[in-house]
Image 1: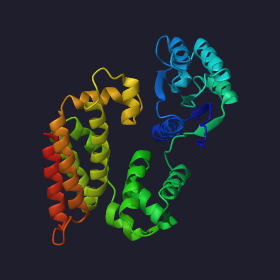
Image 2: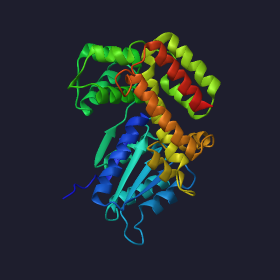
Image 3: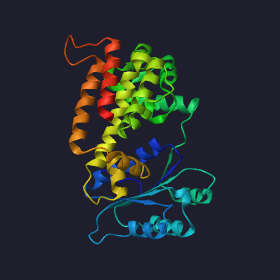
Image 4: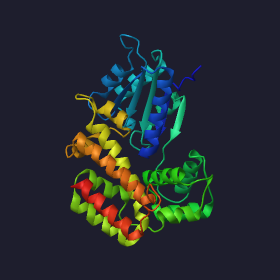
Length: 328
C-alpha cells in the first residue's frame, strides 16, 4: 500500500532549490497514490488569492485528487489565511496542500498560524556561507550515495562557490562520473580546480537569451581564471538551462503558468523569463542544441572513443565554438 503524503506541509525559507524539491517530493508522492492527481498553484501575492485558494482546495466534480501549492505565503491576508485554515481543517479526500513561506518578518503571523496546522514542516533556509554550505554539500553527497572527506569538500566549495544550484549540479556531475563510492580531492581538482568570478549559470542564461557576444565575453573572462576546469560545470549549467527552456518551448498551447512551472520544475516567477528566452528558439533549434550539448559533454569528459581525447586548448576551443553556435 502506497504511503499517504502529509495533508498539509509548510516549507519555510527563501532557498528556491529546497522549496522546489519539497514541492516536487509532495507532487511525486501524491502521483504514486493516484496518477490522475492534478496540481494547482496559487500565488498568495495575487489579487483575489483567497478565492483562488478556496477554488483550488474545493472538491472537484469528479473527485479528482489534487495537490495545492501556495507560494509566497508570507503575502497572505487574513481572508486567504482563513480559507487555507478551513481547507486544512476539512480537506477533501486525497487533497494535499503545501504552503511555501520565505520566513521573513513580513507575514510572520501567518507563518506562526500555519506552523500550528502543519503535519510536516520543511526547512528551506538560505544557503549562503560557512556551516550552512558545508552541511548542504554533505547532505548532497549523501543524497547521491557517495562519500567525500572534509578536504575534498573544502576544495569543492572553494572552486564552485556557495550557490545552491551550482553546488547541486556540480555534485550531481561528480556522483555520475566518479566511479566508486568516494569523491576525492583528485576528482574535485580534475573537474572544478580553480574558481571564476563569472558563474557557469550566468553564461548559460546569456546563451538561452541568444546574447552571443555577451556569452562569449563572459566565457573568456571565466577561462582566464578557471582555465580548462571551466568545461564540466559550464556544460552542466547549459544542459540544466536547456531542459527548462525545452519544457516551456514545447508546452501545449494555453497551458497555465502554474502548470508549466510544475512541468519545468521551476518556481512560477521564472516562467516569464523562460518564455522570453523561448521566443528565440523553435523546436528544431532546441533539438539541435541538445545534440550540440551531448557532443560537448563527451568532449569535456574525454570523448566517446579511444583517441578522441582533447588537450585542454582543444577543449577550450570546442567550448567556445559550442557557446557561439548555441547562442547565435
